[in-house]
Image (cartoon, rainbow, N blue to C red; front, side, top):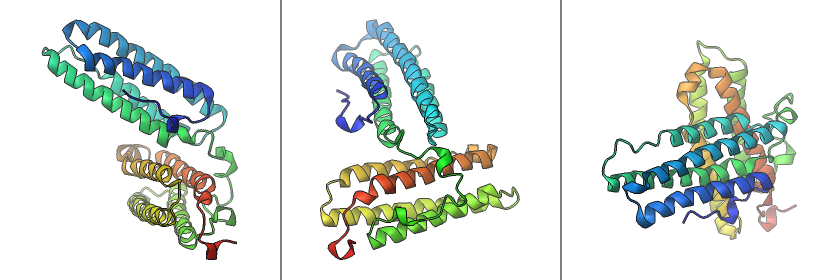
Length: 278
């Protein structure tokens, strides 16, 4: 059973209902495979997967339209992730697999993959819908990468590391805005690697602190951290080569937006030690 759990609820009724139905469709296929799959079921499974494809397409269209309406800065990356899911569903083809046990194995792997992808996509991306400031409200500031007092948590180590993260993003942002094909590309890749490594170090420090104080929100923070690191590790370097400025600008907008949102809506809830509280 592929469960739609409470941590998948993002608080937007239409999107939540559509997510529930996507899980229901995956469950139908999963149950058929698990219980009594054989060759006679091939057409039935094919029809179910076609319905999944159609409904996913409908859902993604609704979700993207909502994000466009609220000017959500993650829209570009969401579109790319949705396209990946669509392409994965379209690759499903059992016609060249004669052995039904092999068909069953392949179907199980595919459905498991799609379910895990959907769960992680909801947790890491959809959960952020409507949480970021609209793009115009922060990226058009004179210095959107400035670390200001509003981001302070009152925890000295975490605040210092957040300030350094802003500084790294600012370096990348300056290079992208003043892009020079002859020199900027390698520098930007170096900064992105620096950002990935420092972010991983910061998350470890933050999680150790939360574990030390027994913070009840640690599990949710870990999930958010893991999915942010996963995004940094799956940067599309082919797209960077094809459209360096455009792709990197979109990436940096997402990274800075995620960081701002995460600090304001998650990290600032972490209690400071008594001696550090105002």
